[in-house]
Every structure is written in structure tokens, then in C-alpha cells.
Image 1 (spheres, rainbow, N blue to C red):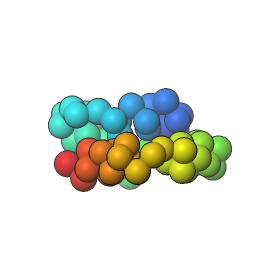
Image 2: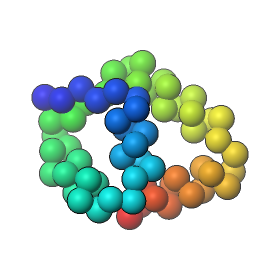
Image 3: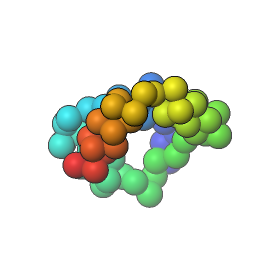
Image 4: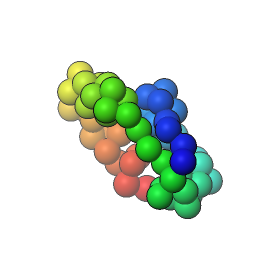
Length: 62
């Protein structure tokens, strides 16, 4: 079990590294975030303007 903090999750979302994203998918069943991290991520999404939100969404789908 791995508990990830906001900085790590944000880095992976923004990253263009296919290797890093593949590792996250590989270990998905062992990765967790706290409710605080979840709230911080949601707050960050709400603070983003529409252009940045769209770019982050497209990065995440890769």
C-alpha cells in the first residue's frame, strides 16, 4: 500500500511521461490518497481557468 500526497499526484497528472503513467496504472490497486489530498486536488481544479483545466484533462487521458 502506498499513500500519495498532493504533490506526487499533481506531478503525475501534469507529467508527459508515459513510463510514469504506466507505473501508476500497474500499481493502481496499491495506490491511495487521503481525504485531505482529495480535497486539495479538487480545490486546485476549481481554481484553474478553463484553458488550464482542459489541458490537464487532455494530459490525463493519454
